[in-house]
Image (cartoon, rainbow, N blue to C red):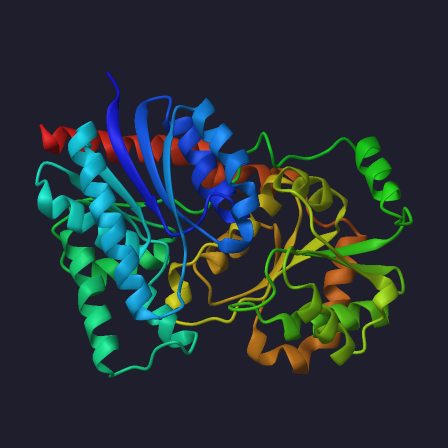
Length: 408
């Protein structure tokens, strides 16, 4: 007999992140348990709702969604919080929910509210980052304000009173164990993973054919950035690096897979005087991303390091590893230092000193790519040790089993 689980996510299922980091898991987990899903969809993604609904129905996942709004700031959040709690309590009572799986801080608060009305329910807080610190880092909240202190206390309360915790990084687990005393005895680490059926290496002939179909010469050296370029990303420094690559090697091309920031990207390209003929910005479906990763020579993503980013695990890194694509990124973010020092799957740089070392760093990276420094073994070892979705599924099932045993 399957147990009933309510999954709450702020990330929409119509977004690429929801598709890769929620649905990819739920499809497999739904083979063992019955899922009821509540998510927040973006207004601009409404056109994809019917498509996702059909997909979820095929896995017998019952889906409830709200259109996300932040029009009135914290008041919008409170309104949505109570709406979800009301719906969640109804679903829980009607379907005898055993576990509430809350993806991130706000859903955890919603989950605790549901648990408060039904003490038999267990709460899994899936920590996706240190939420309050992230708001400070992004300039949306100031330290030592009443709101900051309130949110910090609520977040700490959730850490202590969840029945189980999952973090994306070992760094985050260390911080949580050091700074908090938990009611929960179980903290698991499950980084963002990739589906090896979706993200995989293409045969050489297929790779060359696809590359040629996009208009690239066989000897073109392609640098790729996937996903958003704003927010946490230091896109300016990425362009600084790419521009120097183009100066040192005329065969370098920059490929950006991005859905909604084309105007912003074009302005940045002009600001850095980068030849538009050597850059392509494309919007592609989730299922096609791996094809583009396969024709690239390396992936670039610079993330501004901060205290809050110790809890972050870039999804694109797992996808790069699955496709055997080297990553060029910076230190001070989650477990990136650990992975790139232990496994030879890319380069780690310091953003603070990039300007002074730029010419030499670019020279070394281009030499490594030209000499094909990286070998398949390192990518396979890292992927199967850390980023294989099957391992993540097994870990989630272990957490569920523990919570269900405690429930009995």
